Amino acid sequence: MTVTIFVADLAEFSPLVKAASAVPDITVVPPRHGYWRIQAPQQLALHRKTLGLRVALWNSALSGGIRGHLKEYTNDSIILENER
Amino acid sequence: MENGLRLQGVHHTARPTWKLKETVEFYRDTLGLPLIHCVSARGWGPSNHPDFLHFFFDSGLGSTIAFFYYLGTTHPEHLVHRPEYDSDATHTAWKVDSREDLLAWRARLESRGVPIMYQIEHEIVESIYFRDPNGYFIEIGTPVRPVTPLDIADAQLTMRVAIEEEQRRLDAGLGKLQHVESIYQAKGAALEVLLGDTP
Image 1 (cartoon, rainbow over the protein chains, first blue to last red):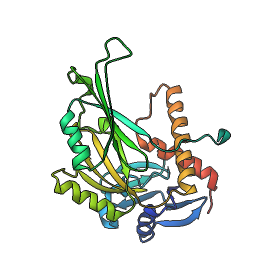
Image 2 (tube, helix red, strand yellow):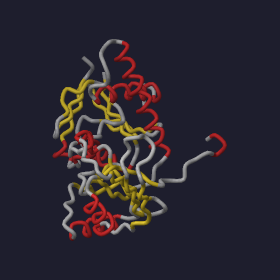
Image 3 (cartoon, rainbow over the protein chains, first blue to last red):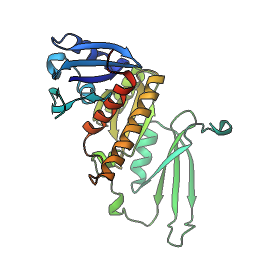
């Protein structure tokens, strides 16, 4: 199953979308009904420092919703994987 | 909106103080908010109501911030402001027009010895935070961008799924919401239905 992070198409989230677009194995689907989709098969991993994202944005990065289970959500990494 | 009934902004918010001089000096002098009204009254209403001062400072566009000073009383333990996240949830946030103004307020406060605790841009507002002599949390912020229809729709969706998810948990005997992940998942499930499986 594909795992997904939904991201509202609002200015403050654009660094997240832009950074995720550059990660290999991640697909970024343009907005429909106002939400981008950041997707990967099986597992999706993001690292804050590597992506250069600010802390406030990082801590609300998933506020658009997710499909999948959060294996890890720390100050530097988000690992989303298939539902258990 | 029923018959166009709507509020027209803030007249005042009010909090109690047991530091009369410090509070007046902070709001009037340090912040520079004009003192515009004071009720000085004999205690009335409930028989144990003390005499009091109720004073108001102009915080712009017709809004004021007000305080009650209860004469002859001591600060009750349950109203001592604790500098913790849950107590700080009760706070006053004023608006300024631009980032330049925000930085000018920061400079004014720092030059008068008021520590700025944080300066944060969080989604739709960039803010500075500090405390008054009572320990009350104060914020001055400037909007980063206008609120859009998507903000409104997104907020409505988040609240709907959060309330539904909490009810689902309560019905299942799991108690109230514990982790934001359950809201993210409920919202993701709702959006997947809305968007369909394929782009």
